[in-house]
Image (cartoon, rainbow, N blue to C red; front, side, top):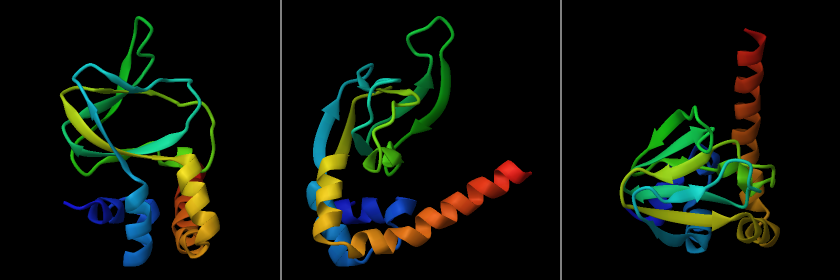
Length: 142
């Protein structure tokens, strides 16, 4: 599956056109990780977003403590860390490879530069972000 196809599956990018997906796809950097390797660490400053192209990884809260809690597992086509494209708040969990994996990574700095050069990317993403906020608000109201 090509980079553009992987990006199109990410809800945040689902409304982007082919040209914008190609632009963002060029920002993605391949990264190989070995089983057991930490990809991002809980409480570190967030700086990037990842798509799993092959392998499996898991998000764990409290990985350094005595009572780790697995939050989610991610396989091919799954993604994590997308909010780091917009802000650098500390990571809420550690993500580590559970098997040898191939990832595609995009940094916040590259993403922001692309949005400044092509503001139509941001405009296309706004409806998705608003929809996600409405869904979060609805869940809080329940």
